[in-house]
Image 1 (tube, rainbow, N blue to C red):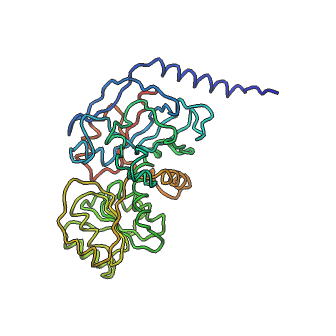
Image 2 (tube, rainbow, N blue to C red):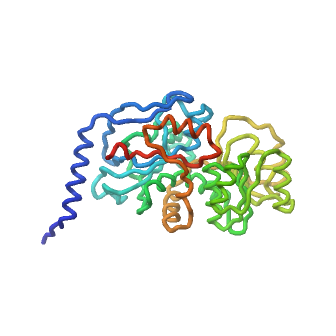
Image 3 (cartoon, rainbow, N blue to C red):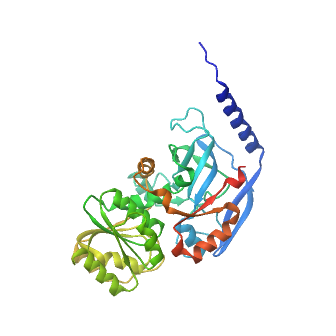
Length: 372
């Protein structure tokens, strides 16, 4: 018994084969580099060659992470120059092993888990792969995704299930925030304060709202607080002085403090804000990454019996849960994207973002110029 392919299937198959043949004929492609603080360039690099167990991907969209911006500014702790940035992205599958166990096929629009773990350190052996002792995040400790094509281990590739590719590129930062909110065990009825109204902070607020919490967000920028209001937060705190911050926290919580505070900046002052604003017996989670030390009265942690959590990267389950959550319309992820630049305008995008952070949330690169 046999079956024949219909005309549409044959056309699509021939089209895909034609695209793949053209890709294989190419020997170089374009890649973005941060060469030094404040310096971004586009260079020719070799095309990747897919190995068994890997997927060849064509980049569609890629977002500038806070770590990428920190690398551009020279303030990010985990970056060596020169390096290709980027670990927030969506892509089209070009090649994959046939009949693989993950169901990944050519033509799928996917995103990827960019946190490479060693598999044998103490953390990995205990299943805490997101905090691998030799973690290698794309665009940080190893070259990132901001190039025309990349290869990825197939187990790190996740089907976007029909999500718009531009929105799908923002799933990874959402995972960072969602993982932090999960670490703090945010639940219905909690009163939560997010310190930092950048992308990660706003996404943490969205994640906390999705879990049924009452959520406030704080920042030094009035512009960012105004943008945060569009995402359904219950209130904002302008963190212009320590006195005003403390007064507002007291007013909003009847002097009790917040059940959960989430640090999404990475500064000593904002860490202190979260310790101070947390209630007795409360939970505080640190998502932000910084380079500076903090000298503070650590006995406050003991006095309040605080539960202080670190949150690093994310897990596969975070990606899968959030892809479903967004596709079900339960989180307005598309609204986080405020600016889109063509890939060749990389230097301008970084410069604009560095000088206008109060007016931008998620800045995304469009790779379509390479695929017309």
